[in-house]
Image (tube, rainbow, N blue to C red; front, side, top):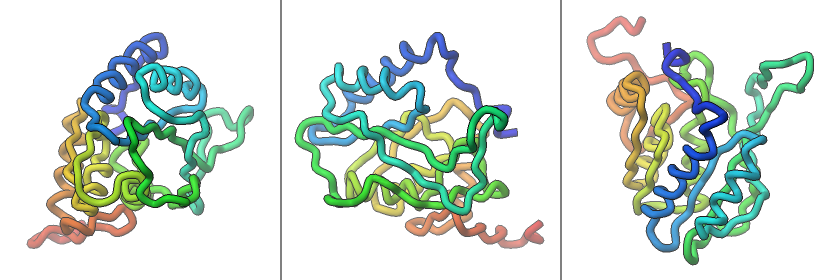
Length: 203
């Protein structure tokens, strides 16, 4: 059911759509803040150009999420190898500094088990928490324009960061709310199965 809820922006409208999203994101960013931008390979150059034109600092050398012990996927296995990684660009506004200076740009975390995934592009809380801690550190506020599974908000809560996020899908809001109430604040995890609510069989 969550896959049915997931819709992508039409390719013909994508650049205009993302220009609006990024323009508003930069407007809302505080001085000396970071912007993390997950993207597909073929959109890297145009998204990088938009961010540079908005005055952000960065380089077209993405950071990598390496996914060991995770099933790699491709929609066209006869033509392409299955991908075992994803990438994101990072940009700074003002004089933002990396919190974990000297850290590698490769983040190695296994994916969310398929039996626990609530969103088709879900990233593990542990991965997002490490990214937030690398760039942002603890405390402060983050904005998540596409909340999806809500895992970025949960990772932020683990770091005592105020997270503000939204998503068009009621389904994802409901699954996020379930995670909030079935796990312990400050210990949200994608790698542990939440205990069954009291008074249920656990099935």
